[in-house]
Image (cartoon, rainbow, N blue to C red; front, side, top):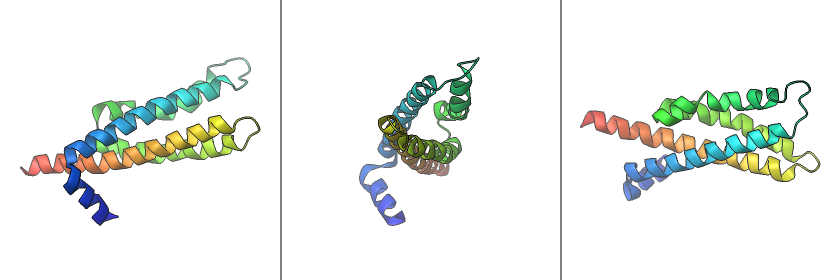
Length: 133
């Protein structure tokens, strides 16, 4: 895997790979937020309909400063949190009539995980290269 990544870096360059990973992170992060809000709106909330939305979206929103600030360490932690949304998407997909929404959530969380891990690697190598020059 390491040789494959190093070959990828040699062919495309760190700048291009970092930009591609960043676009994947931004797109999947936005889509996951939309899917989480959509799923939360379909839940019965009792007295306060905002509670399920806040509870489900808060972990993602806590990483918004890291995503905006382009911090590799924050992206690495977001990758781990995205696995919770992947698990939730798989569980929701098994519910009757919720297969599409759960499948989309699982795939989007998987894309976020992949993008975050690639971004954390490429951006940290990019920053390390800039400091060594």
